[in-house]
Amino acid sequence: MSQIVTLVTLISKKFEYNHDTVRLHTLGPYSKITDITDGPSSNADLHLKEGGDQYFTIGLTWLLNYLLHLAVHICTKLNETSEEISAFRYTLYFMCRIIEHEIGGASIKYDPGRMEEWTEACNNLLKFLKWMINQCSKLSIKKCQEVLQQEINTYNSTAFG
Image (cartoon, rainbow, N blue to C red; front, side):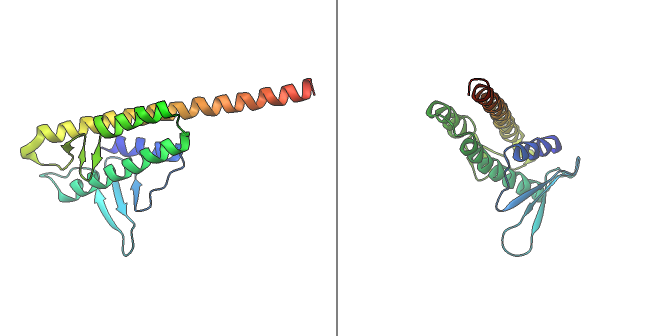
């Protein structure tokens, strides 16, 4: 899970995103997530302790909420075309729909008695992250195109001015 937290943190920085209610803390294999809503903050683990842990489940649920808001922010930041928004909606609502503690219809709550469902939720989480990485590459390409277009415009205005 620590690699996922690191990846999500990097994607958040790339898109200049700060969640209103939670903060991620990359602490190697002991990553945490903090609820910063009104009142004293509370931490939840993003690593599984021996024998299971309710704070791990809480942390995963907060992480899904974070990812949902980050995904919406990414689409806003990219100023998506209607075709790209349709693809995003398909990803978000059908392939990896996030509702409370579920992603793609599978619960992220850790329960040793329901490992198949938890594994499916983790798989859906990875698919969702793959989509986010794809969006990051789109942003990089768009920024390169914008910089190149500015250079061309500058050249044209000075050369042919």
